[in-house]
Length: 617
Image 1: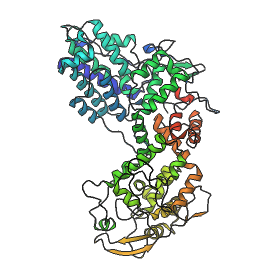
Image 2 (image 1 turned 45 degrees about the horizontal axis):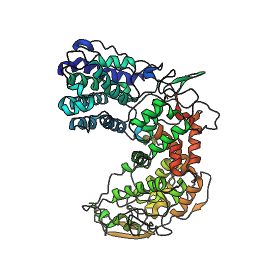
Image 3 (image 1 turned 90 degrees about the vertical axis):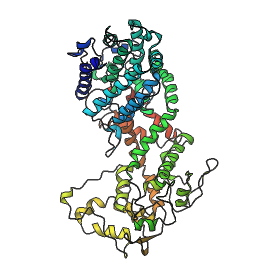
Image 4 (image 1 turned 180 degrees about the horizontal axis):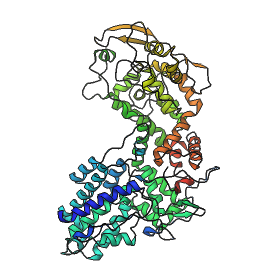
C-alpha cells in the first residue's frame, strides 16, 4: 500500500490541518489535486449545514427548531448562548474515541502500533484551568492522527479474521463488491463521524475501491481517510437547523445532541443506543432524553470524567512529590513510611479526594456544602489514617470521623495541604484558596517591578514561625502588601497543618541540612481572612475558616464557573445564556433534593445545551 498512501497521505494530512486552522465553518473540499494519481479520491467533507448526513430538513436525526428536550428553560434576559468555536477532540477524547471506534466496528482491541500512535498525540496542557480548554493543534497532532489511521488500517490487512469480522465474508473475495464496501462504509463512517455519512461522503469513500486495490487495501484506505477526516478529529456541529431570525444560531440535530451528551460524561463517541435514539427521534423528546441522560450518567465512564474535573480543578497533578531524602524532611516525617516501598502517601491522599467526591455524588445525595463540611474519613490507607489520627475505614459499615476541632471538609484534606519540603508555604496555600476555590481574581505581579529576592522564600530562623517569617517579608512593602493582603492571612490560618497535612498546635523548626530540631514554637492562627472581601471579623482556626467559606456560598459560584468551562470546553460568555446557566448551576449545587449528581446532570438539561452559536469565541 506504499504506492497508494503517498499522495493520498499528504493530502489527508494537509486537509486536516487546514480544516483546523479554518475553523471548519463550511464545506471542506473533497477533490484533492493529485489524490487520484493512484486511483480514487479521499473523503473529507465536514458538511455544510444544509442536510448533510440526512440530519436537517426533517430527515433522520433532525430536531425541530425551538426544541428543548432537557426541559429547563433558564430565566434570563439573554436568549442566545455564547459562541461555540470548532474544537478538536481533546487528547483524552481522541484516545477514547479510537478505542471505542475499533470495538464498535468489529476491529477488536487496539494493536501495539495503534497504541503507539495514540501515545504520540500531544497531551493537552492544563495551564491555569483545564486540559480540555487547550484547543491548540500542531503538525504533530496531524501526523499522529494520520499515523493512527494507518495503524488501524494495517490491523485489517494483517489479520484475515479481523477483516472478516469488520466487513463480513464478502471482504474475503478476490474483489471487493460495491455493496460490500458500501455496507462497511455506512457502518464504520457512522461511528467515526458520529452520524450517518451523507451520500457524497459515501461516494467519495467508495471511490477508494478503485479496482486496483485488493479488498484489504481498499478497506484500509477507507479507514485511513475516514479517521483523518475533520469529521472524526473535531467536534463538528454544523448540520443543525437555523433558528428563525438568528442566522448564526443552530438547533442541534439528534446526532449532535448524542455526541454532546456522550462527550460530556464519557469523553468518547456515542454508543449504538445513543445513535439509535438520535435516529428514531426519541432523543429529541423530554422523556427519551431523560432516559438517555440517566443511562449515560450511571455509566462508570461518568465517574472517570467527573474525577478528571475534580482532579484538574483542585490541581492535584501539580504536586511534584516529597523531598524525602532531605535531612530536614526526614526529621519532620520521622515515624512515617514516606519514601519506602509500597508506601505512596500522596497517591493515598489523592485517592481519598476521589472517594470523598464520589461518595457525595453517587452514593449519598450531598451538596457542595455537605462536602465542604463533612468530618467523615473515607481513607482505607493505614498511612493516611495515621496522619489524621483515626482508624482506616474497613471498606464497609460506618466511616470513622476526624478528630473534633482539627479539620473539616474536602478542602482541608492532606492532598490540598502538603508541601514537598519540610516547611509550609502560606502564600501558596492562601493564593490557591483565593484564586482556585473562591474564584476571586488575583493580579499577577510583574517580576521586573518587584524588589530583588521578592519571589524567594524567607530564610529559616529558629526564633520565628513560618507565619512570622512570611509575614515579615511583605510587611511595610506597599507593592507586595496590596496583593498579599488578599490571600496571605488565609494561608496563615492554615498553618494549623504541617507540610504533611498533619494537624498541629506548634511548629517544629528543623535545620534543613542536618535535620536537627532547632525549636518548637507555638502557632497563632487567628486572622482576618475576609472570605467575603468586606468581612473584617477574625477567625480563630482552620475549622472556623471552613465555616466562613461554606457560609459565603462562593465555592458554589466558583465551582459552577469551573464546571461549565470543563463540561462545555469554553469559558462562559458575558451577556449571554451562559451567565444564567452558571448562576443556575450555582443554585443547583446547593440543592439538597437533587444533590451533586443532579447539578452535574443539570448542565445537559439547559435549553442552551441543544443550541450552537456559530463563531469564534
